[in-house]
Image: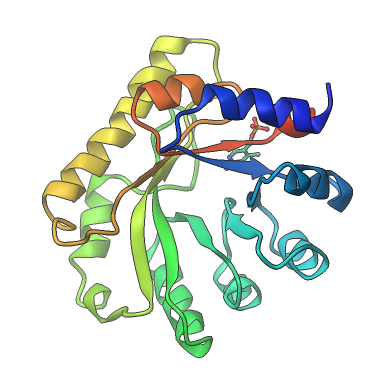
Length: 220
Ligand SMILES: *Cc1c(COP(=O)(O)O)cnc(C)c1O
C-alpha cells in the first residue's frame, strides 16, 4: 500500500483530539514529502543529525518531534527549531534544554518520560525521581521550558493486558501530576503513548499523541 493510503487509514481510525506523529526515522526525504502532500505536519525522529538534516531539507512548517534519547551535548543543534522533545528524564537534560532555549529566545516544549515497561531500560523516570526533579530548587528557575505532558513506551509484547496496564500506569502518573505538582500548569495536557502495534489500545486508554512509524512508512 502507498504511504498516503496508510496515512489515510490511520487518520480515519484516530479521533480528532489525538495528534498523529509520523515517525520518519531512517526513511528518506521523498517519503516524508509524500506524507506532507497529504497534509501530515507532525514528524518524529530519534537521531539528532538526521533531524537536523531533514529540518534543513524539508518545508519549514513541519513540526519536528524529537522522540529518542537526547544527549545533553546535542541539545544545541535542535534547540532553534524543535517543536517537542518527548523523552526528558533528568534535571541535567532539562537544564540544558532551558539554556539552549534561552539562547534561541524561545520556550521549548517537553514531555517527561516515564519508565513503564517491564523491560530493563536505563531511560525514564519513576514517581520518586520525577518528584525529586520537580521539587528541586532549580526547576522553578527554568523559565524557557514548558512541560506539556508525559511520554512512555510499553513493553514490546503480544500480551495486550500487560501493555494495557502499562498505559494505565502512565495515565496514573499524568493524573497525579495534573492534580498536584503541576496543577497550575494549563499547558500540561499531553499523554504521548502508542506506536504502530499498540496505538489503538493507547487511545482507548487516554493517549493524546501517538507515534507511528512502520504502519505509515513500512518496516525499517
Ligand atoms: C521508532 C519509534 C516509534 C515508532 O515505532 P513503530 O513501531 O515503527 O510505529 C515510536 N516511538 C519511539 C520512541 C520510537 O523510537
